[in-house]
Length: 76
Image (cartoon, rainbow, N blue to C red; front, top):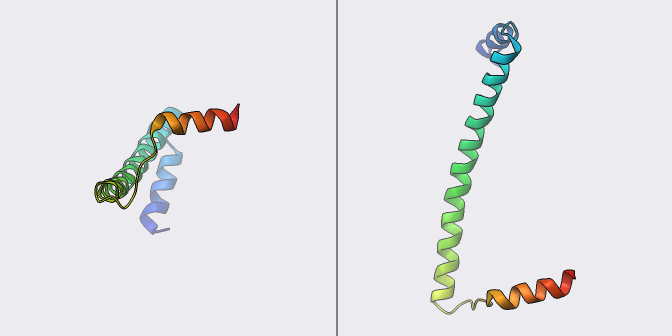
């Protein structure tokens, strides 16, 4: 860890538990936002690829009713 991070850790340890909890929540949310942005972008690319495959006839979809019926049969 960098020296700055070590200094921050020492200072943050002195905060009341409620303040540390709020800070932890903030930091965790900031990580989720980064991960969500990456995941969203990856899903957009994947969905575009799948739509293109279906529209070109490369892939043929399965009706939802059939998929659900097969799942019910498998897990009932």
